[in-house]
Length: 299
Image (tube, rainbow, N blue to C red):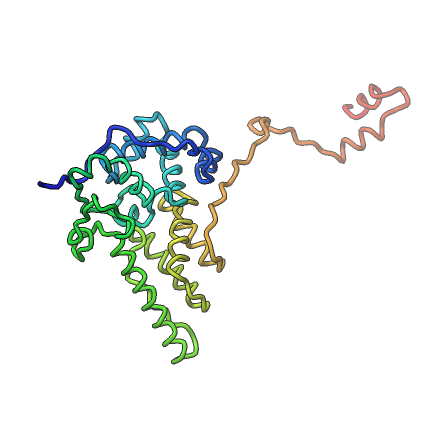
């Protein structure tokens, strides 16, 4: 009997303690009902097609229109969901795919009844290790682990770890040879924007030249941090440059300059006063009061 490929669902389970989850609480506190709505919207879109959702450059605008939400806010919430690992950030950065290990565990539970009769084959973006994958889920290991398959996040993660180990070894050799760190930038691409990726590599180099050995997890957190502090590519570059110049270990949002409030009378010609003459006028006032003094000063 032929196996079916991953298929969509008509509904999905929402746990009764959904709002008790700390990440969901923070999401609601920061973005209100819009944050919860967007998260549930994305889950619906994922489970509608299976266990992952492939997005493109128009995705944010489509979501913005569907939810009547500003596209900038869509970006902010999505960055938060990736930063807090509600979606797998590495897979999203490499392949623009929304999914997570938790989503795939729930997917297994949803399809179990029908998949026991006819196993389901998954061949792309499967994150669960073999020991967590149910027997009725058949992973196409060739496609999911092929060197030529750009969809394989686990393979990329393994390569990422190996490269991280390699350039740390190179740093150690350079330190023994010359007494200081010689940084060899990893060949990984952290961002699609070449300019952003180059300045980020320069930031890593500056950290390494100070004798700091960054682990894979530290670099991944730095990537997540720069994505969270701004949604504007040019502003991200500015933020990283500022961190390099100041020797900072992290990234901080660019402070917006407040527009100076002008005096509403500045548009009118201001009267020029001769305070010396005004003082003489006051001193020359007679005992009769202001009128006598004013006449003498005007005369």
